[in-house]
Length: 406
Image (cartoon, rainbow, N blue to C red; front, side):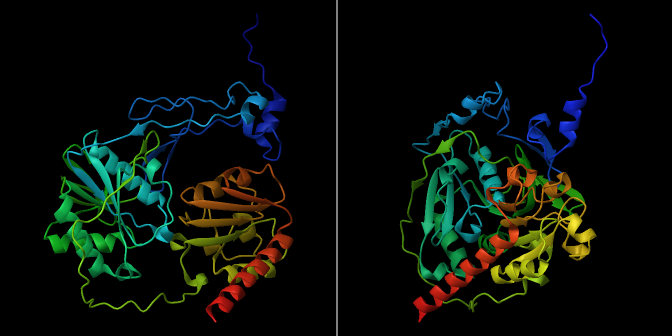
């Protein structure tokens, strides 16, 4: 038999052609990549991935065998239940819960708490006010304490610190974990530390035994120090929980909270021009690409939604959007909670730039493009018709809300 390695020109052509139906099958599955903060992330859902508990991911969808019928009959795997009947200690976590749901930063924080709790401790999540989250069980929460009341609505750091003090007195946790974020966790954690007269560890991204490592020097240096009781963790501080589900048993405070007279009055949210929000800080981005033919309609839709405008590199190069609106590895890395891509096929540089977005919505004519594969929700159709319908739906919703208020 000849030792000559023969090339397959057709397979090479399919691998280069992103519009070919078999293009995705020719691409290697990415098992690890570097996050925006330089931390190597692993694909915990990849086939063959071995987690910290020694559980190996098995492909139950039939995709490895290539059978279409087997792929349609995917089996939902029931994760093992982790129970802590009598916790030896607690690891308390105060997630940001932006929009009433766990963010990716919150899930990283719960993953770190799970590591600190081990098998004997329990992770106690403290949530203020009403929430919309239904996935606490798969995020690693063993106990859930919801502090309800109008006194926690809006910006109420003093009342929240008082609530955390009451939780600290009752449960005496081994560690407190809060996200070191602009969404409220950073400020609340520092206020809470001042109230307890303790020195917190800030911008922590790694914990090794009894030592923690945090960012310092404008993020250019690492600072190692003994592990304190109060930890303000950065994004990607740990892998989120993915191999177990938890009880999420509700707990309550044994004493009623006294409502203190606040020295800070919350006057409500201030309207901000979405165009003035930096791309890296925007929570809702409406981005357009080469598939947008009516840019006036695109701007009208973004204004109706109250979203920050973004664009692909092609749209910027064609002069439809400014250079500072470019999203992607060659533009701005964004961390929006909702990212809407209109007429963007999904080049690899663009997909890298939106890798940290929570929810991605794609509007495109091509059902096989890479952006559709990345999206959590896809709408296949002509962008102009979809944008007209979207504007009409937003106006109808707002008019109905005004009538209900009247």
